[in-house]
Length: 320
Ligand code: FES
Image (tube, rainbow, N blue to C red; front, side, top):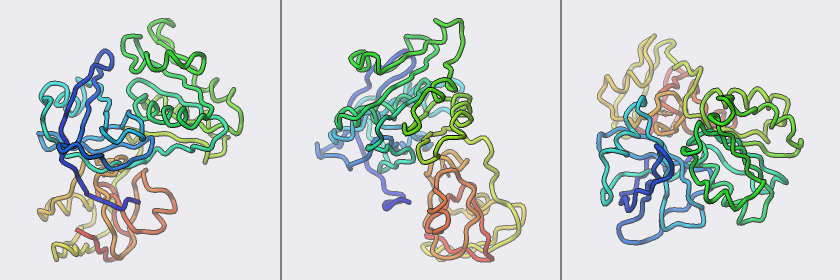
């Protein structure tokens, strides 16, 4: 899927900008002023935090501006600590390791109409997509749900878009959520539909889009409801770079076996949804369990997500 698996940049945090209540925009640039690698609307990067944890954040800035990556991060006091670290510990001027951008949420630029449904911080990749469609003169609509008006990011930007933007504020509608099903029902059949937000919104979106052409339906999840890591029978994994051979025991996951053998693997979500652990497969047939690779990519067996996937063949040879 990716040409530059594992590649990273040392980027300087040059500004922290207030985005909305609880959300800051973190601006990263190269230290020498050179342009950043190009990306496409909907991309995200892996950020390695000072704690060593790796987190994914979507790029909000337009793909035409390669002077910076602007990442929207909402503080989640109940999260795993990534947003807290960025909001409370990381200072302007710090250098952080940032992966090359990856895109699991690509935009179809030629659609006659693109309808976006965003919940909370899910607006970040969608803002980038809308910037692209605006530049192309394409037709789009945005339905943006927030709990309180003060939590809405990019409101000044969207204020110029008139009736293309519908803001749904839960607190101003007696706490009722945005009616995703009605939005989808009213959408023309040739529209491309996008959703990024909390799991209940994504579930409602998927259910409402069940009868739609699936190549017109696009969503990005930040948690995986049903990924079960492969832990079936025993198999052998040969590691081409470290020239080692390890046995994955029955009932053990590949990741557990790699970690037990002291093999360093970059991981973040451990749910097959972020792509951080993507690893080249040299030979063998993976038991793919992730929700990132397309069916074609899975069938090609060129790469796999080692956090959750296993092996269907007795031996798997990996580029590790
Ligand atoms: Fe996220 Fe494996 S760590 S896909």
